[in-house]
Image 1 (cartoon, rainbow, N blue to C red):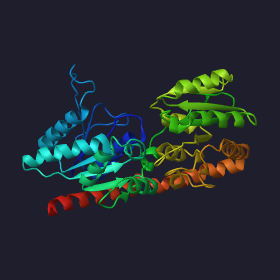
Image 2 (cartoon, rainbow, N blue to C red; image 1 turned 135 degrees about the vertical axis):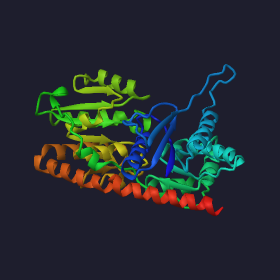
Image 3 (cartoon, rainbow, N blue to C red; image 1 turned 120 degrees about the horizontal axis):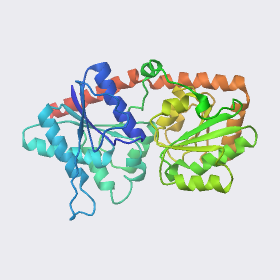
Image 4 (tube, rainbow, N blue to C red; image 1 turned 120 degrees about the vertical axis):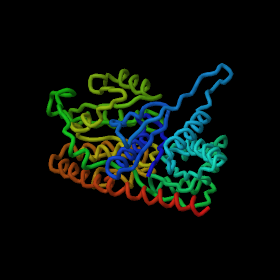
Amino acid sequence: MKIAIVCYPTFGGSGVVATELGMALSRTKGHEVHFITYSHPVRLEELNANLHFHEVDVPEYFLFRYQPYELALSSKLVEVVKQYNIDLLHVHYAIPHAYAAYMARRMLEEMGIAIPIVTTLHGTDITLVGKSPLYKPAVTFSINQSNAVTAVSDSLKKDTLELFDVHDDIEVVPNFIDIQRHLGRKVECNRDLIESDENKKIITHISNFRPLKRVIDVLKIFQKIKERMPGKLLMVGHGPDRKKAIQYCRNRNLLNDVMFLGESTEIRKILCFSDLFLLPSESESFGLVALEAMLHKVPVISSNTGGLPEVNRNNFSGRTYEVGDIESMANGAIEILSDNVLHNLYREQAFENAKRFDVSRIISAYEKVYQKALMRVQQS
C-alpha cells in the first residue's frame, strides 16, 4: 500500500507517533510511506526506497498577515497523490491536517481520483483548540468527512464524542513504542555526564513546557524530594513556561540541582540513567513520554488525568494522583526512591507495562483501519 502521512514534524507526541508509525509500516510491513509536512520530522532517522519526505513550501506574501499553510499543504497533497499513486492519506491532528486533506480530496475528485482519509486525534486538536467556538465547526466537519477516525486513548474518544457531533464511531488505537528496535540499539549510558555522585537520585521531566504540563509542580515536587534525599532534576524541553521555571529555580537557589537541557534528540541517553520520571500534567490525552520512560525501566509519578491512567498503571509502573496534589506525588516518589527493593520492582514492572504498547500489536490495528477506509471509498 502507498500511504501519505501528514503530521507536525516537531518533538511533540503526535509527530513522534506519526513518524515512528511510518517507519514501522515501511520497515516491517513493506508499505511505501510518504511524509508530507513543512520540515523534516525530528524522529525520521532513515530514508529508503519505501520511505520518502516531501516538504511543504509556504511562500511569504506581504498581503497575508498569516501565511496560508492549509492551502499549500492541500496543493502538495494533490501533487504527491498524483505523482506517486498514493492509496490513502493518514493525517495526524484534525486541524489543520484533516481539513487540508478534505480540500485535497475534493480537488482530486475533479480529476477522477478517489482517495480515503484516515484522521488520528491526539488531544490538543480536540480538548484545547477544537472546542473553541472559532474552530469547532471546522473540526466537526473535518472529523465527519474522514473515512475513518482513531483516537489515542479511551479518554480522548470520550472527550471527542462529548464535545463534537460525530456521525461515526471512533476507534481507539493507542500510541506505541518499538520494543525490539529499542533492545537492538545500544545506548551509551554514561551517568557521570550528568551527575558523578552515585547517591543522588536523577529525576527527569520531559515536555513542551506549556502551562498544562505544570512545570512549576514538577519543581515543587522535586523540592520536597530533595528535603529527604540528594537529587538532581533534569528538565528536558522548551516552551512558554521555561523562563518561568528557570526564574523559580533562581529565586530558590535550585539552579545547581536542576538542569535545563532544552529540546533534545538524546532522550534514550537521558532516560537510561534516570531513576524516576515526573509528569504531573493538567491534561494528557495519552502521555507518550511516560511510556518512553517505562521502556527504559523508569517508574513514573503522574497525575491521573485524561489517558494517563491507561498508560501508567497505578501501583505497578508507578503512581497516579489527582492533578495538583504535590504533597502526595512527592511522598510517592520518596517512598519508591528510598527503598531499593521497591524501586527495582517498579523498574521491572514499568518495562513489563510498556510491552502492552509494542508496535507489533498496534501496527496491525492501523492496517485494519486503513482497509476499512479503503472499503468505504470503494463502496461509495
